[in-house]
Image 1 (tube, rainbow, N blue to C red):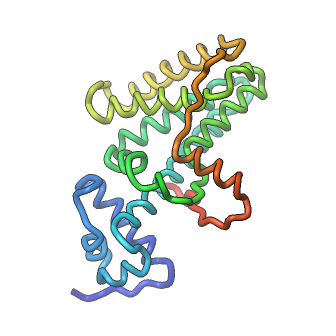
Image 2 (image 1 turned 90 degrees about the horizontal axis):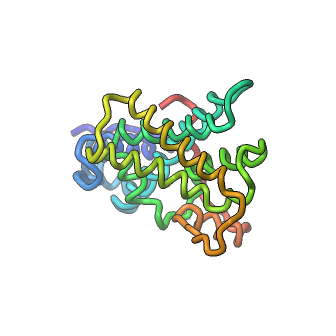
Amino acid sequence: MSKRQYHHGELRNALLDAAEALVREHGVVGWSLREASARVGVSPSAAYHHFASRDALVNALSARVLARLGERMSSAAAQAAGPGVDAQQGMVAAGCAYVRWALEAPAVARLAFGFGTQHAEVVIAPHPHDVIEAELDRLVTTGALNATARPGADFTIWAAMHGLATLLADGLMTLDGPEAADQQTQRLLRAVLTGLTQETAPPQHRPTAHSAHTERRTRRQDNSTTDEPSVTAPTRPQ
């Protein structure tokens, strides 16, 4: 087999593209680094210059996928904003983008949240969780959400949208197409947001939730002098 030549940095992206295609075709665990190398026309040894193992490739792919999802959610929320639009619409639009993304490529969604970045000290920008937090902060700023209801509300919203996406992706719940999924997402998130607006004082024993992303963010805040690699969503449409 003839080997292709890549400029600096191009091979890494080509391997990530190949890995994502393999995930879509075979699932998260049904392929190898050697297969990804063959797909882009290079030897496994060339791939090892960028990724020490298959796990490293999965880790990097998971980070890239999450950054793209964050960008998609952020763009949806921004497009939904405007004069005369109700304050909840940005969050609802971001949630619809999240659920649609999970349904378009369930295997890629499982990789993003089930593998890879749990232990990777990378900055994923924008991270989907950060988009949720930004929309909630905006609701507080505009007076559409009481500040006492804000702590932990990001995990409440995430649980709702991710739960719906998982039920649909796993076939435990069925709807008649993407538009129906949008309608169900809107109903769910508006119900949750309405419930949050009824909270006027925090309960005495509200649990404090954490995720891999929020824990990484806390470590960065505690050690801001540490230099870390960054993963940012591409500017071109995906």
